[in-house]
Length: 328
Image (cartoon, rainbow, N blue to C red):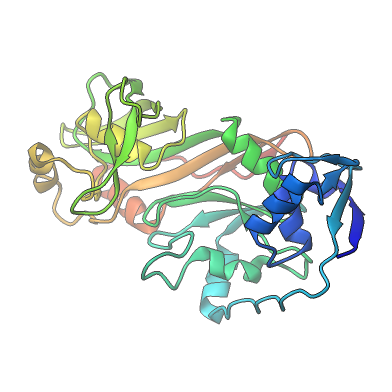
């Protein structure tokens, strides 16, 4: 198998070597990439490299030439109504980033029993680009609000690094059952993933538990309705699965509509809610502030979903409108 040599482009900065290989050779198995790296058949600037090596523009990559490649899978068919709704959900885009206001109930990715999901619809946002938009982070199916997409593979690597490094400031809004005491503070409670009758879930953990991961959330009460409900601003300082939902339960203020994580002794709070409020999850990714890959700082805000707007109106909570995207 004769080798070929390619040069890492600017858009491929910081991408892992194995991902670079799969980009240029779709269908190439990870096990084969690992073998080629281990045996020196893949070289970076003439030297052996690990699959996790981060690349920089201008580097020379030598890789065995693939004599025949499997035909790429055709893009999934997108329902025209889904495509239209997805385009209407875009609140910001430039040459590198797309930001969506994700609606309630739309899974970000597929899974058991999930055939309709956001990832299968992303070709609707391609806009004749050679690159398909890429997910760089996740929101739960029933969480609404800001979701970032990368328009190029290089941007995807940069944004993923920002999320890993906690360089993006995330602000969520939630309506909770109960009124936290004190009204603002920091929740520093380790979490772990556990199994159970309702499937895998997140649970509080002891600090000395080897399976525990540190999880920190700052919260602030923005308004309240008597002692039954409150509007919270939540700022996760870490990114654990279902972190905000479990942390709200920990301060005895479960998120309205979150039946997965409410506790038996908190059922009274849910039963006492104002009649007519939506039972949908009231958790919304309101704001993101991040370093833009091309320079400057980008701030984005997303309007509340219909069910939360209705709840705010019923409870007399007055939220300011989402500010237009700002890049400085």
